[in-house]
Length: 423
Image 1 (cartoon, rainbow, N blue to C red):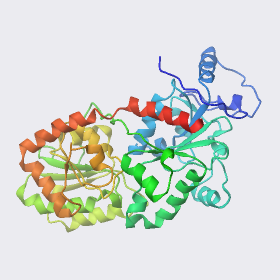
Image 2 (image 1 turned 180 degrees about the vertical axis):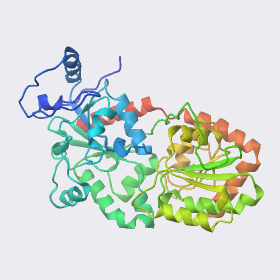
Image 3 (image 1 turned 90 degrees about the horizontal axis):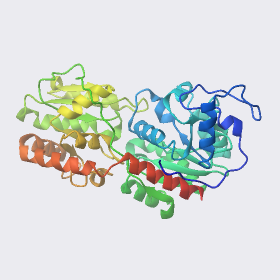
Image 4 (image 1 turned 90 degrees about the vertical axis):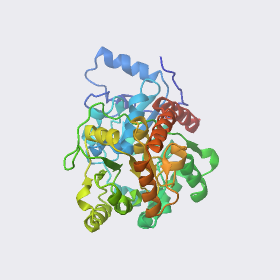
């Protein structure tokens, strides 16, 4: 049986309402103090078991509501899937879009206050101005620890907080200068309220301490595990699956560096006339990046060999990662990089720029460009394509490196962090 963690008891709780939503069961809204008209024996067995585990951690599950999981959504999914049974978990969301589906997406309890909605464009100015609404507006009074899984946690009041920071691109790159002020304020507010910070790499942890002044004893580095690729594969439409290709995967946004990748491919394409370039990922609606990448393709003399794909299915992603000559990470900044780990376990060589957390996560298992210029990236891509011995060495190193990343370890270290935050 998995170990259990007990936290200090929280203040007066909504005992009926906090147990109103069960795993994969439709939420039933109950007013405080009113008894439910019906509960099965299995419900009460589960309820008593949960109450014996101590206080509750409320986890922001909003990244699960995007429809197609991003890297952050994958992290939240793994966390919420693996924590129940080890600690008492309450999922919540501050999003209007898709919130009705939350009970279908998680196997832990869902906050009975899931119907409460404050649009983020309204909540953010209110948080800055008056520190309201506080976290209890969304999660009730029971949870001892509130975990903001995607950079932001509501004002904590008398609760304890944990904030996951995936990268600090907003503070590194000029493309994000308009967002950096708001971004910084949310993190600094959480720090002023005594929140702890989960950094996904040591590079992100150092940024939190040096750029935002978060005390060292409030920052913990916890690595993610390796995302599971689909066991089934199918090629995405629109390219010749019988010709070799290199692939890049990620959201179309400035820091991903996709226009630079197109330029790097152009510099070596004449040496490899059969090779195609595939770029796949969801579009960032707040960014002009899809247009920039499309323009780079339009300007390329090899545009007919460059394929820009939207979000691909898990089966299509598995096909691309497992069958590519190499996976290329042209990013200008990354805090961690899931696609690199997916390539490691798929025995696909990785080429990447030496930026952010990439050298730390790769630890010698990817071929890093000598610098961050387009020419540096092109030369690294060329080396992997011409040298079988380089590819073989990267495959062996990648498989070995992938063993350092475990979801079980990630979840156990989260449990430790929750206990520290609550104590």
